[in-house]
Image (cartoon, rainbow over the protein chains, first blue to last red):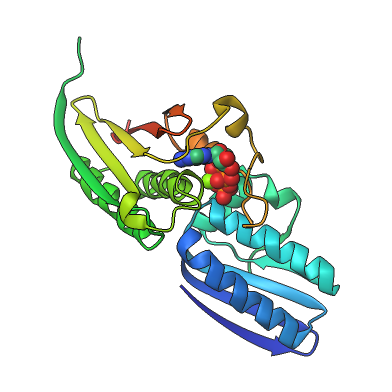
Length: 104
Length: 149
Ligand SMILES: Nc1ncnc2c1ncn2[C@@H]1O[C@H](COP(=O)(O)OP(=O)(O)OP(=O)(O)O)[C@@H](O)[C@H]1O
Ligand SMILES: [Mg+2]
């Protein structure tokens, strides 16, 4: 699992590459929170297009970032979730709680 | 007519989070001989990851010495194309299984857990059974059809 981010004015996009499970969710959480705190964006985008595996730990990660974004006062959008990520988001009904944007 | 077991495997490993990816890859590898679809393999990986993570996070929570924390996986492949996966720990056990299996129920309030593991296991398989005894451990049995019918 790897994370890269890019900032453009008030918008930060963080890209997650690889597998999200319990083992690497903690590192992902630390990295993402650091990016949010450093950039202080108005809108934070989590790009899940390169997520090859995602279980309920990924749900916890996304829900946790939603709380984080609410605390610092920015919006959270999940961008282009891969099939693996979308299947989990749908099961949890999270596609109704979190803004999801697909396609460029 | 009875459904015959045509192949089987067993593994045992320590309850360390780095083994979550090992466990799901091992089961996916075993299942591959039945030539399942990519989607079925993806579902198998997810459900194995859920059960193994639960053993590590909940079953053995608070146990420092992980060499005392075994996780056992047994797979049996049946002639009909069913795969039965049993994932077992000797951890703390579950007090109320019915409640534990409700969507969004979690006992882990500071670990960013969503309480959706059992819901995912239920919806990604063709059957789930949970057996647990307090102080003795938990066994989750998952069934999945591998044939492309
Ligand atoms: N192997 C186990 N040993 C002990 N308790 C367990 C075990 N598996 C599950 N539980 C209990 O059942 C609850 C629900 O499990 P479930 O996987 O659905 O959610 P979770 O693990 O809490 O969150 P998530 O899986 O979404 O990260 C857990 O919070 C825990 O209390
Ligand atoms: Mg779980």
